[in-house]
Amino acid sequence: MERRLSRPFQGHENGVTCLQFDDNILATGSYDTTIKIWNIETGEVMRTLRGHTSAVRTLQFDDSKLISGSFDKTIKIWNWQTGECLNTLQCHTEGVLSVHYDGCTLASGSIDKTVKVFSFDTKQTFCLRGHTDWVNHVRIDSPSRVVFSASDDLSVKLWDIDSKQCIKTFLGHVGQVQQVLLMPADFEPDEVPQLDTTDTASVSSGRSNSPPAATAEQPVDARAAYGSGFTSDPDRPLPPRYMLTGGLDNTVRLWDTTTGKCIRSMFGHVEGIWGLVGDTLRVVTGANDSMTKIWEPRSGKCERSFTGHAGPVTCVGLSDSRMASGSEDGEVRLYSFEGERVEERGTPS
Image: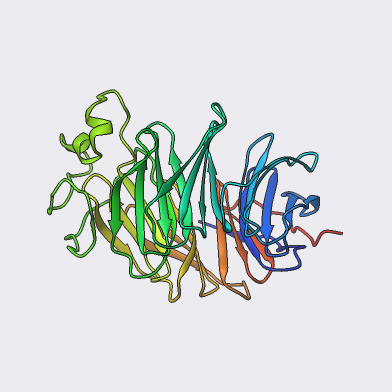
């Protein structure tokens, strides 16, 4: 599988902390307090969004808007096409580390140890408390109405949005957990080794053997494993069965959320993992060792490692045809998969 590197996107005055891209646009956030919107084909900066007063730590965009979170304690909603800031949310008492928007609900994680959930339909906000340290990453699963959160307290928590309760806590990482990646419904690991009994959830179905084979559906007791919110509503979709997490213990871990068990640890980075994205075909990680790695998620094997950044890789992005990495060196590097030609992209004028 051929991979070609474009010339780095350079323009931030400090390290890049977060990124997202699609076929046309790359959005990046930085310690320099700005968000830049790039033309992905030319490498030119189309727009710089200014308004945050401290580092931009997280962002997400769609066709019309971009949502960003900052160490300045605010979440901003932008029209990225015009550069206008449409709204500023002040939900947290400390810096915002992660945002995730699913179309009607916004979740955020913060240095203040909380997860906030804001409904754009009802305009109501509620707070999920339980972590004892920074909440680094949040992910909503819309069909099942749950939120996953990763924290410096070494845990990942699963929250029921309806009941506003924590229904599972996943323990096993020995370094701060930075990322959660929910795997698609069609994902099944190739084979599952013997479980490490030290990696467990505080609520689980009590299983200690390997999960069912790849052809099997979730166990009959899966609904009970997620609590009364799922047993009382037989039509409610279940949360994703598999998730990957990345932490500063240098590992990526694969979990079965039904049993609460860590079923695989993926080793390769020699320093902590900051970025984790992926799909059924490939998983990409970025780490403090200045490296980006591509993994085959079913087997857990590292397929390829990329060097080139002069500082820690803080964030990564993935599409069907491309991969991006952002670093504290202030650059974003874009790669193409499968021999697709990538033109040289220059430094913005």
